[in-house]
Image 1 (cartoon, each protein chain N blue to C red):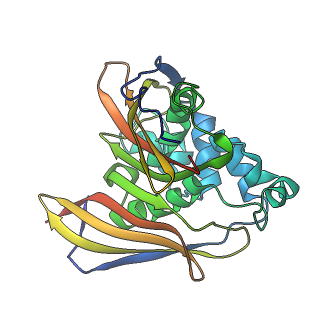
Image 2: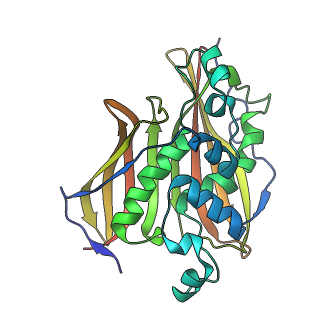
Length: 146
Length: 132
């Protein structure tokens, strides 16, 4: 059965995420980040930041709530039982710090099929309060047996 | 201050062994509560050997190898990875990274994360701020 590509280009409503100091610390600890910039507000301020700095991969925390509605969208038609997170790209324009509010918007960037597998790419762009892009992610999903 | 990198240079290896509750902590920290990561019985019921690591946790180890080598989180400009092999708990993860090129103050680095012979993150490409 061919994949349905009608959802390519579809965008989802922006999701606002408030970056919190304790959430940054919890994430940093879970991934083994020991840099005091992530854990100690004093060290972060001494380095010129307003508060603790989120590790770059904290992008998954603020982007996931924006991309999940697309992955569950019946128009996109992903079979979750057969889903594999096959790849991930991030590009960071700058680090984000606790206290910021970020707005993230996801869209269906590409849908294709090869060898009985469906390939779904979501482009996810996060902007700061001033409207400047801080991070762009490409979330890549493979669905087996389409 | 940006570090100096040269093509062909191997960056320091990062080694970390996820303990048996790591995926539970990462689920809470990341918001990804897919039961294949935290429920042994469920994972086995869908044909997995047991609970598996979150791919994005493994990617975070690749990212950490870059930021530690480059001297800070602000040095990492981009990271692209593929997930293939399954990562498991209580087995050492080794991240290896080699500088491919340095141009206009940006080092392009090829990296991967392995557990034994299994490559759990492959074809990783990082861009990090460097001194030409």
